[in-house]
Length: 466
Image (cartoon, rainbow, N blue to C red; front, side):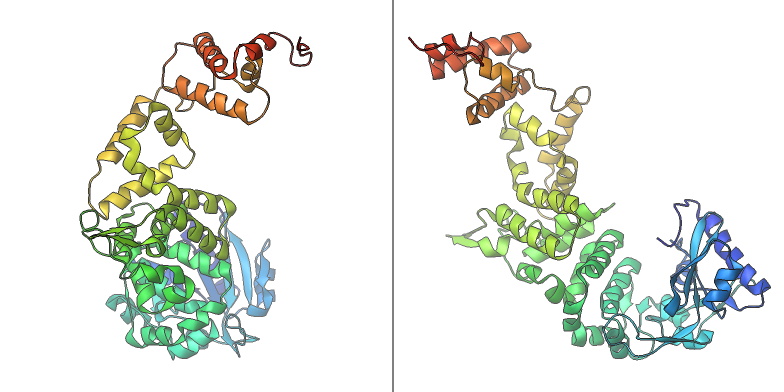
């Protein structure tokens, strides 16, 4: 992280201004640089403030006690100020890139040269804190006013230097609701295959930011497709395009359009919710079958869960995220049955850890298709009725209770335990003793009287059959 857990943007801003003033006082040139300048010009609150200076890294470290270098060969030092750290980078020019990610070496230089080696014009701006003026060598202010993401210089060269810039361009366009400049978009289409060499973690982080920060994440997905990056990074989603669906349930169109609309409906997206929405119907194309005039997708949720699991593993998602997203994909069709579920089944469904996430996804699924929210409302009301008690209370009957009734240790114990817990959840008995009496009668009916007689002896000292 560039900053500490500081919460007050004004304190963060003041700390970054202090860093610039201290560099000025020591005789160096220093400006705010990059995204923080862009955000301030747009009236957005910057997440962090970077500083660019002509001071060498050693001079920066000497000037700020507690600072430390994080990329000495790139001239980057983390400097503490008012409870936060700010990255201070020496003006530089980059030399040959050979790995599609980093320059082999850099050379410390001046502000204009530094601006012209940056990725996009809107990120190549400097702000003089004391003069309160923007320093713009590349037309970044004009592009911000026009709402355009444009590479600095030749876009083909910029993307060959760092392939991730292609994905960043799409992310910036989606998050800021900008357009890609014509030549920038053309260069991405031409060089999209280069994105296949990107590290999975870098791709994942950019995609997460795109789908959780964009006001209309579905439009971001559409742009990914238009410039050819979806086919390279998320090839499983290409089959969603043109995959027809029954009009009575999906008047909005094909599966891709449904997914776009669903992502656009998100209000406060998390990585789990965004990727559950993105992947929830990925199993439809491989399971699509014609049944007369009707299209069916039998077991598409299960198929989709397997595909989603492979995608999430490939992108190196944390295990907890993988499990939650895959569970949402696998179970999203269960919502159509909630009004017909037994009380015990419904309570188990509502009581699972991922239910709040699944419920959010179900709502979005409905809004992006037929628009009917009756099952969503039913579940919200059901949750309200359980507000004063645990959805899944502690079981009255345990495994040892069941073995004392004559059921031998093994799978049968689990079966009887589930039956007893279902009966408890359905409210069929007043308490433990009444439930045990019923269970004893049911076990006796199935396993027979001799086993019930043996159950009166200690499990460690069974009676010898006569």
